[in-house]
Image (tube, rainbow, N blue to C red):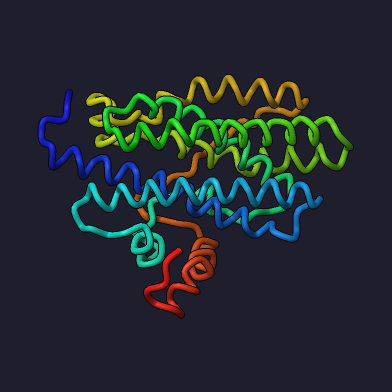
Length: 258
């Protein structure tokens, strides 16, 4: 089925990009929590740079969503002017940062997904999306390499680092499934060539991540449940405090821009 109604197609794509932009924005905020707290100065800088890349992705995705949905909302309006229930990010990216191993596991899951996603979106029929993806895919490739190297290093490190990595995997694995949820608008966009249905990325992601975990001598968890609801505005109890901090400056100084 193709998208015959341009108005509906634009609304579909706006909603799709809103979810991706919220993922990038919220994960960026979580990574910023490591500033001055990372294990080494080099890692402090690495996580900060990844957070800045994600913030840049959020700006473009949210800005384009605001144009497509016809409301004229800016990236600031969408980042700072929405309440918790209006955010469409997955639950994975809003979970507390945990210890360093938990952060590495989340980066492993997200960066492999984002690399596949943006690689596919390079071929979008929407020129803004295609141009964004062509740039972003190069950045998330570095994020993917960073997370992969840390996963192997910690998995094959000490007994304690291995224990923490496996605990992080067991904790976060059920949340990764939400990255690949596809709804009817996503399928329409996929058929029209302007976006990719996320569920089609899962087999490649499974293969890539399993190879990394094998090299790290870690066990692929078996999940008996899967997280859902974030794309519909249902969030964890940890999200409210995170959002309050993210929006605090804007609320204190209305009209400020980022």
